[in-house]
Length: 67
Image (cartoon, rainbow, N blue to C red):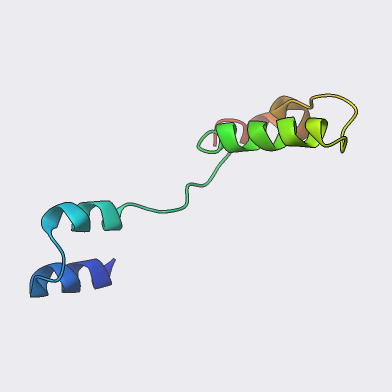
């Protein structure tokens, strides 16, 4: 992230803030987002969108579960 380095070099942000800003905001893959996906499945059941709690293993192919 070049913009973080520019702000750090000019003194507009601290090194601590730069470290936080340099981390990726979005995480990709099922493993990294398991809690969010399971919460969505819970909400789907609570709101009557699904007749039962659907597991992630039922939704996604086995080869994608470790990603």
